[in-house]
Image 1 (spheres, rainbow, N blue to C red):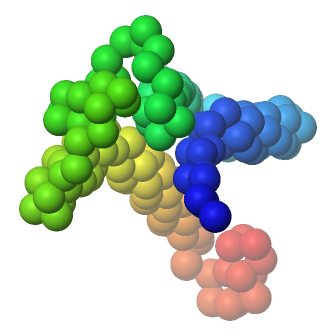
Image 2 (image 1 turned 180 degrees about the vertical axis):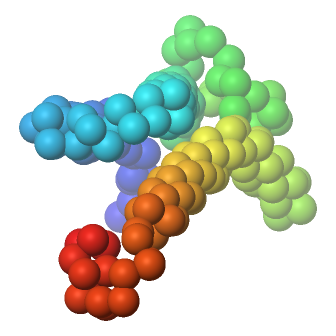
Length: 179
């Protein structure tokens, strides 16, 4: 019994999951915005930069997943033996050149297959570098905002302590002023 090779899953499923999660987070952010508006407006430049970086990262992530659709279609058509007039895949270009069209099956040696898979893995890693950088940048900007807020808090506490009248001998009066 000849076993039929399974089709690669279309990335549309993952795009839908990404869109649903993004929509849930956006709705949650819109619901919570009136209560966190004061915190956002404490440093609108930094918080706006964080949101702009997040939006650019989301657009890039959606684009990278969308970019996989022609590649998956090419692989599925090649595995089924259909020679359609599809454009040459970008990520799988060297593989499509090496394998030729689907009418003549080329047998690859293990070494050449390993070389093809390694080059594909390195191209995929290179395309993920920007998304990794954006994630790191978002973490850095969040930490920068946190430390900025802590510095302002320490300054305000220092100002409150500085404004205390320490000339009175009653410590209860001093603590009342501090409160």
